[in-house]
Length: 130
Image 1 (cartoon, helix red, strand yellow):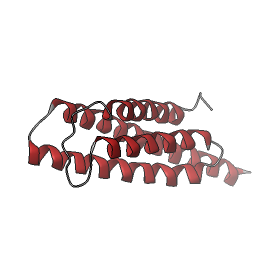
Image 2 (cartoon, rainbow, N blue to C red; image 1 turned 45 degrees about the horizontal axis):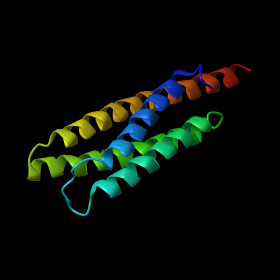
Image 3 (cartoon, rainbow, N blue to C red; image 1 turned 180 degrees about the vertical axis):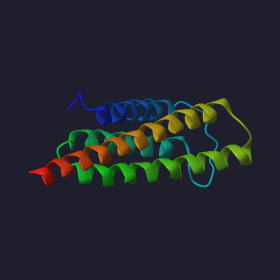
Image 4 (cartoon, helix red, strand yellow; image 1 turned 90 degrees about the horizontal axis):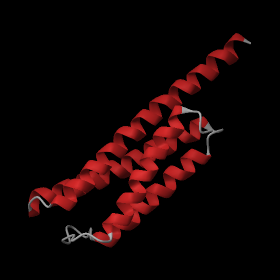
């Protein structure tokens, strides 16, 4: 499980989201469209748990792909809401830090998704040869 590169990508995204969830409760987050620090914390913690679940489902690659896309959609939505908060209320270094860690998580999840798809294609081609 650990030797697969998609597991390492998902583990990196999990750690980033866990740190984001822990950091979100300590920041000065002005309420923007119903998103305060605690709701950001719960969404990030839920996303971290989803990423952990994706790691543990290593034997079910099609489900892993679907859950990666779900995690990616949630994370992109979180980034968009945070970005509009930055645009409307000015730049605060805490939000820039959150946007940076979320951006790295997006890149990591996309790389994991591509590696899972490549792994699935390899398995299907080997099944075709038999």
